[in-house]
Amino acid sequence: MENMNYDVGDAFATIENELLDSMIRNMKRHRAEEAEEGFQWEQWQAKQLAGLEEYRRKHADRLNARYNSINAKMRMAILQANAAGGMAQEKAILKAIQKGAKLHKASDKLQGEFFRINERKMDALLDAVEHDMLRAESAILRMHDDQVRRAIFNAQVYANSGAGTYEKAVDMAVKDYASTGLNCVKYKDGKQVNIKSYAEMALRTASKRAYLSGEGTKRQEWGIHTVIMNKRGNACPLCLPWVGRVLIDDVWSGGTAKEASKQGYPLMSTAMAAGLYHPNCRDSHTTYFPDISTPPNKRWKKSELEEVEAQAKREARKQYAKRQQDKYRRLERTALDQEDKRMYAARREEWEEKYSLYERGRIERTIKREGSNGVNLEYINSKEYEQKFHKVSDDRELNEIIYKKALELLRENNNTDTEGMYIISTRTKKVILHEKGEVNSLCVQLNKRKLAVLRKSNSPIVGMHNHPTNLLPNGSDFVAAGYRGYQYGIVVTHDGRIYKYSVGNKTFLPSLLDNRIDKYCSREYNLTIREAYEKALNEFRKEYGISWQEIK
Image (tube, rainbow, N blue to C red):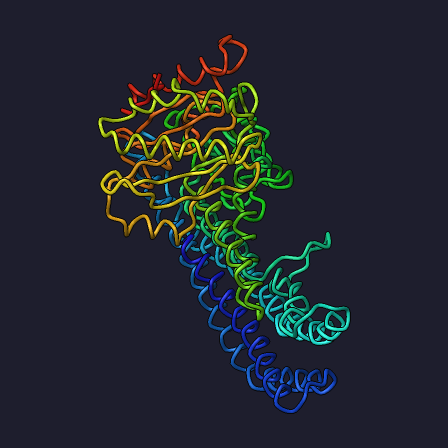
């Protein structure tokens, strides 16, 4: 079902791209015509407006046909979710009966009535989704027209204000439209949302409610109305007060206020009025069979609540990274000036890498450090420091190149929180990649193009980067080492330490190691930051087979 949400979103993204492409094609073509005839902004604007009208006339019907196709797919997905909910619930009920649940199926007459109630609910849900989507779709061409007209007139304004070339002026004029895309859905609070995101949200929310409605109909047939909100590690903050609690489902399963009063459980409708099952919600409930189901556990440990809050923040950052990725993809797509296009492509690649890191579990954490980010240049130029690198491996030539590149990393990033990276072939002893992270970001990443270079090298590799915080390898370091295929990694700190590390035989998310470090940094353990790192790393050595050592 989640795939269908994204399929619908991609369908609208394709329409958005086609509209942007048509605008840019028009501007390119008329630029060429004006160049031959002698450029006049007034003539150019007139041709742009004529092209816009022609596009609307030719493509309005075709777009409506595509909207109808998308809406039909959404309708089918919602109906399938309803049927899947009913089937899954019947299996769960029959399994509970085998375990001893005392349930009796309603008569055929009552079952027919329950079916008709579900049918009416589904018709209302489908009509509401279709109505909302038709309103959003009708705004697409209208918004496109408004944005293109604004860009047509702004292009001359930017040109007259000294933007430079025609291409620069057009890029500045279309930037607002390309940045947001088709933000044609406006909520009551004034917030505007891109049509792609809105369609994904609408289908996800409607499918969830259809599934729950299918489940509820089966519960009605068997006369059970108690449900329990599933407890999961990343519950929505709005749903958190209800997670782990038993409810009387008066929304989908036919429960009543009288039952709630008698059994002492709150009503589902009360919980929903307080925020449960909000749009885009990922929480869920299952049937609660008295004497069969595990008793509810609505208590949350402090650490669990902190993790829920942290997870919500991580998800928000991930979604922000996705929106930025989409923004720069549109800007790159529409840029006429080649310098602008290269700049937007670079920004897109940065946000793609950030998004992929969030997908793989990398998180931003409170910065911990020992000492300052200033490099002791006298020490790193000493014989004592150089001799440490003789112990990195049995390969003298490799050790020498690692030493030289370590000096370069430390010198170029002295007194900053900027990280740099070298990836070196252990076979050829040559640098395959050299990358510098964003200034003071405490992070260095590889975009897809550079990862492809790494894959093509087909050589055993060593990865080395600097730690301005002067701390040991962390969760992201181990995950990156595994993902990129390091034979081993090297961390050089600004205070002159050297760490060698490698992944083990079991994978783990970076947050697992980082959370363990955070745990040992808490007051109850009374450890220094370095001791907390060492304790966590030694435990992961046993649990996940990693290796690490300080080269002295």
